[in-house]
Image 1 (cartoon, rainbow, N blue to C red):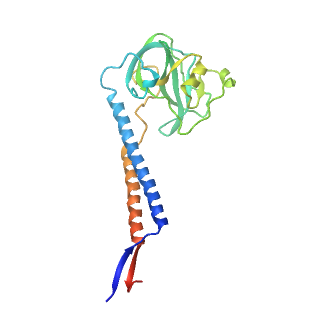
Image 2 (image 1 turned 120 degrees about the vertical axis):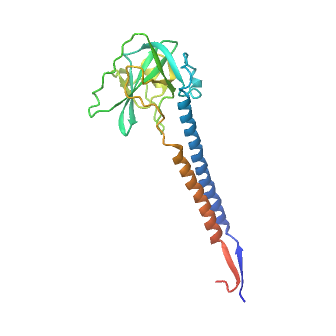
Image 3 (image 1 turned 180 degrees about the horizontal axis):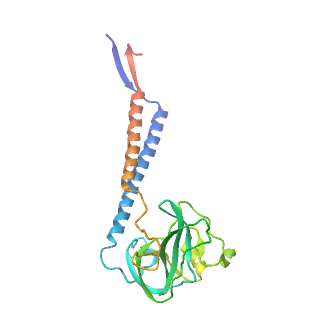
Length: 246
């Protein structure tokens, strides 16, 4: 009669590898779940911002994130002579520009994003960006200035860019860089111009993010990898002992 017993005695290196991989996979899964929660919160904040009347006073720079997507109605006049084109802005797979026009009416100007227009083959050809300097009421959503997915070197001061004609093309500028070009202070966020306000360009302001379901799917994949390597670890490290064991 065969007397076969199973013995579980994994080597130390395989246990260490299992722990490292489990930590990596679980961390990746939790990060994906966190991203899903962030997206849901962002979409919820955007939708809830339509509830109630717009605010009539801008908030301090430090409150930009809590007030993100809140609607504001601000009076002032546009600085038509000093407009900024945010370069390399993608909309529906096409490259183009977003137009930042400073609105002056308080202690600091607010950068009003008047929308996106496509880049033509001849980058020197621009649509009519002009806007009159009469006092007006502007309605829009507060948002952070766009940022690149990777760190960019800060623009050098005192270069030929300071003498470039307006409007000036800037690639993911910080508020400090914009202030250097304008020569006056601005809020460190932007106001996304309402679709009902004119003049403007294409204004599709809903957050351009994939749904949270994709992140949840990725999280399930990472947790599945974790379960799979645990099963492999257990199966591979069982040893049969005793008479008749191979």
